[in-house]
Length: 473
Ligand code: GLC
Image 1 (cartoon, rainbow, N blue to C red):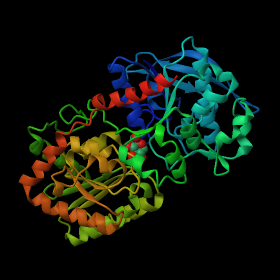
Image 2 (cartoon, rainbow, N blue to C red; image 1 turned 30 degrees about the vertical axis):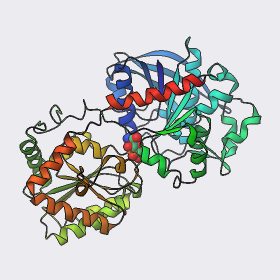
Image 3 (cartoon, protein in one colour; image 1 turned 90 degrees about the vertical axis):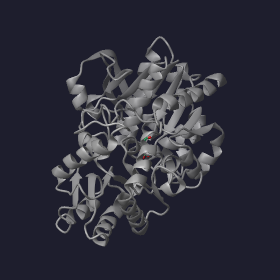
Image 4 (cartoon, rainbow, N blue to C red; image 1 turned 120 degrees about the vertical axis):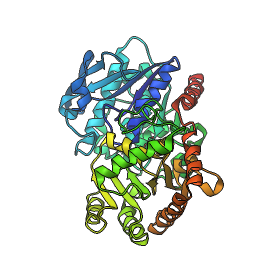
């Protein structure tokens, strides 16, 4: 089967969050399973772009209302990522360091979507299926159905995968003329709550909708930032497919970013060596339990709970624990976290920013990983931490509920229900008690390390979904 994934992110080329990890891994496993997979993302000014060789396979002009932007389609020459990678180069709009956050993001991603389709219709063959990801590619299913120039793709099935329904890419009807010509009889398809809502459009027009965990699919029926009723309407074509992880990249036995490699057979010693290295780097005490957080410091991820929870847990335990935070995001949260440094020296530290290598060392060297998320469509960090023998402490929401079961129910982690400082601290307290019972602790670590979250197993569910819509053709 010939599959196109169109996305704003793809690890290791451009990463802001978990979307990149999924789009960097799932296609590889689909390719291994015998399919012909292509990944298309914008060409940002990235290290990967500058350090690898590309060939230009197509060029043209994107027309956006009265603007014209020249573009090239660049293919990475060696397929080193395990699939064919294509970068849509629109220098005026994407030759920048960041993936998102610019005033013209609407124009940028609209141009990207148009250029991608212009190229796809220019090819001889039509793909079997186009898999869009999140709102940045949400207008593609609409354009395939209704824009005159993409008529060739009218019968090509499209699927949209929702990694995060909070972000929807809304814009005003004053920008309607940016879209390639289409039959105005369908203009109402674009509308949701008086604006053009890219995610809603994708959900309406795609032949199938997937979310990144089954539980998130249930949750968005009553909590989806205004799209609840739409999700209810499209339930018939929706499915929740739990993300996998790339077990080649995330393997404590082979990971070259670790101080010491280890497996389920010698994890106690292996984890301790990584912990010592980590504690050395951050002036922490390797004899005490180490709680870490890795991720974006946003309310959505419960980042705002961390400063208070950390201060309370450290004082209640008379500094008998360590807490380490890696992440960036809301500057207020960043400042609050940094302001604790002086009071809890030797037991608490932060790294504001993102560092992939350090993240790997933290998964390996920590005892517990905090994920107090308010919203977590899937969450990958809990799966990485399980694989590295680190016990996740999660709020029961979205994909966290699908993947982490409390150790009180013979599970692999520690769970709480509320996104509150009280609940987080209560879980930390349970973890401190567990840490003293090494036999029990190791039993739970082993359960986590032996869970299979590989894409190999999961990627078949995507293929089944594609097959369902291909049959509808
Ligand atoms: C988004 C979600 C996260 C999910 C990831 C990959 O970042 O917030 O929960 O794991 O996408 O699908």
